[in-house]
Length: 122
Length: 186
Ligand SMILES: Nc1ncnc2c1ncn2[C@@H]1O[C@H](COP(=O)(O)OP(=O)(O)OP(=O)(O)O)[C@@H](O)[C@H]1O
Ligand SMILES: [Mg+2]
Image (tube, rainbow over the protein chains, first blue to last red):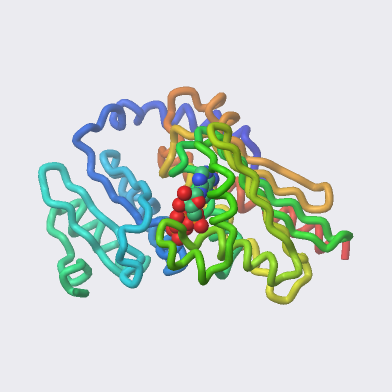
């Protein structure tokens, strides 16, 4: 069974990277809609996929957080991506399978995956 | 909702929105009494008595009032459909405690589901808040408490990738352990 003991070892390892993460005001933000409508439509696995992908690529300047209902329940799961100095991009009906492309093309390379964005749904 | 852990994620969003600093999630299973209880307690802004009543009223009326949402009625209806009950206690300025009970063996009772995902996502998106998750089944219990993690981790933020991975593994392995005890008994 897993115990808290392992955490000490993880702490040592993580401390080295810590300075990289500190004070990232310039960070990229991924915001997942986690109101009832979002969660019922599958927002949790989408959020988990973002966290996993971002962690796997060690993108230390990206944070993943949550927001409530933005009034477009039928288009949930909705994910908003904020790049510093750029317009917010809203993705609709996001699936975990789409997350890899959003991270690599948009978050890493700066060009939104247009076919998944809100413009394609309205 | 297909999983109780999705209700937990949803109801914890209410607590976060209410400005809670401390959120305690408990799952208490008692196979002898045939109950499956879930509670979420927070120290957020709380609700006035009129609000407590309003959010508990049935779907149809709450849906149209617009200021009132779906999360609580959905959870309450799920419990009541499984021969269970729902209770909401709240006090302005002090906090809120929500308790739902299902008949554990009821055919429509949802599984707990991916609780590791729920807890890991809550912590990773809200690393400054204090979360405690406890699961007790017939007296066997474990807990994950971010205060304990913080004591060991010091200044390392709780949303660091290694920590999120650790939290998932910790919960998954402890849930598996609880599961295996039940199999041994039967
Ligand atoms: N823990 C809490 N602390 C303070 N107020 C709460 C809490 N939980 C619920 N409320 C109040 O009750 C209302 C109804 O909650 P409920 O979860 O049913 O719907 P919602 O959160 O508004 O919308 P939805 O859940 O559909 O996204 C909330 O908008 C909030 O005002
Ligand atoms: Mg809600």
